[in-house]
Length: 210
Image (cartoon, rainbow, N blue to C red; front, side, top):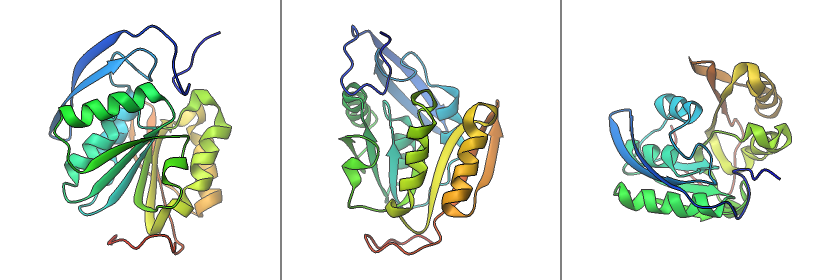
């Protein structure tokens, strides 16, 4: 049976990889291993989201399904006075994200293990960024969208990336259904960045979002 990157505890033999990533003026050194998504090099979807995601100073940011941590690390670099929480269900990915945070000298971020929003169940954020696991099925991706409003401050943003012709259009429709709005802020190599804004107040957390 094929093992997927969203497996909680991968059992595949570990093969180690190391590569550099240069995005938005930031050069990162990334270590990776087999058993996580796009282990050998940064995938195009994550690259596109990292290039175009909206990040503001002082924001509290959630990188949901962080993999080895590129989105969260870039966000932490872009908002040095903000704070980033990275989460993933894959324990190997969580281990790697922790290593990469230290390797890239990130002080304003932490990594937590758990399924989707479980590790942040009582918290809200100024933005949630995610490269959703399309191969896990639309049901999982829809949960990311449906549960996002309770984890966003009023005015907070859900930002996701997908291939428009390979599930992205459906995700956009779901974002419109849940949030009442969705904007495509960038397109590149068949990928789109979809952004929805939470228009309702959330009592869990008060933030400086403008």
